[in-house]
Length: 241
Image 1 (spheres, rainbow, N blue to C red):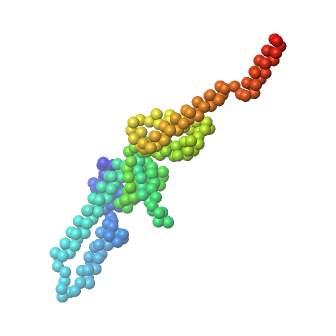
Image 2: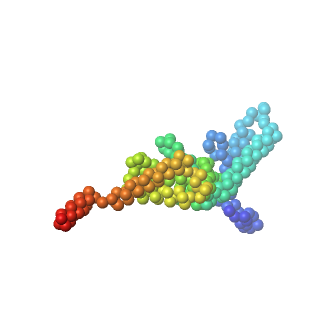
Image 3: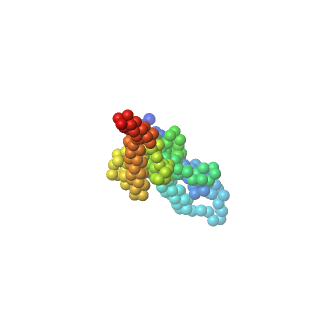
């Protein structure tokens, strides 16, 4: 945002955004009225007033002063919106939108830049513009990262079979989840619910039992090998007799 104004022929030159701010005032019905329209109404009122009971000059001045006051308040509100929007550049935000079907949806992303148009500030997120009036939440990057990490963790854990139904095919996923959890900071772990952490521990313990059972099975000789050894021992004994 510029901190100096352009000067030509000894006069300040308004920027496009400044012109849009000072040129229009929104009414409660959603229509717009500028100074020229107000003056035209004022002239029409003077032209068609009752000549027997004319409106006093004081009343006209009061009407114009009231209009000017409203204009200043609108300009101040718009300027505050512009300043607020400029401070959101680079921030992660949630925008609340309503689709054509009437459903409310949220758009999340980083504000890349701000556009000023007709006294309104628009936030650019992924090259799409959203009115600052639709801003719902401003999110800290560390918070958002920890939240998304916890959500992905919970989804992967939920996709595993029941604890008693896992086998060695699920070992890589369980090992990965255990590494992710152990690598989390204390702040990130606060986003993991206690029951989810307890469930992970159950999976880890069950996987240890399965691996231990698999090792024991692999270390035991098969029944055929035992029979061959017995036959070999018997044959050798018979030859010696």
